[in-house]
Length: 314
Image (tube, rainbow, N blue to C red):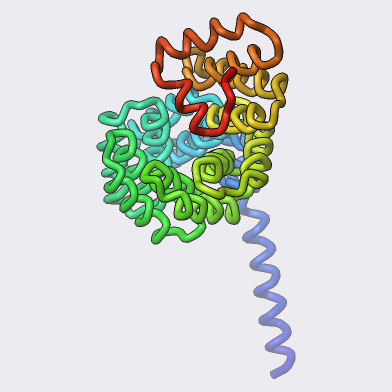
């Protein structure tokens, strides 16, 4: 009986080895794994997905998945045009590809093409995939269309779908800030930063809420502004908040640099123009008046707004 058992185990082992020897190794296994690994570096994923796509051996459905994944990696790397090209190709293969729907919708919303984003978001909602992203997109479209209450509700739904969805907390914080609920805004911004300490939109928002709030924490505001501006110099709201605090502290050179960074992104921003003008005037450069006058052309009451925020303009 024991001999038969040993012989049976040995036979099974031999058959398993033989089967393995008959199955050729997958030369694209590493590329498949890396292409699907969302934790990997964007450039590495782009290369791996491209390797798969360029073999020409993928089934059509698998090719669509690889295109969407390469699009996501490309978008993460900052190349929106090529990402959009991959998303479009993936959706041409399968119009229900959730990753491609999500990526294309985010690009459309970021570029202000809300009507183009609408059907994509609705398809994403219907799919049930990426629910937090889908509800967040609904909120962003409502906010940009001037419906803050609908936006607030949608952000809440995104948070219900994923309690750790930091962008929804940050955007809901902005809705509360605009409604003058500064304490509620700070609570949401802080929740976003507890999840993602590098979320510069939440840092900049919390800076402004503390500045605008009576008895706000100006030390925290300055820390948030400095951190956000350093992490993302093109964050206009961070630069504007830091510039204001620098003006209040008499840091003319620093304030001018902050406002100039904002003007690099938005050349006609009246707050940045006026703030830079104040910094120049207060540091002895009388030509700062030109900046201040240009700002008044955009916003006649800009001087009063700065004075209300504690800035001595002359």
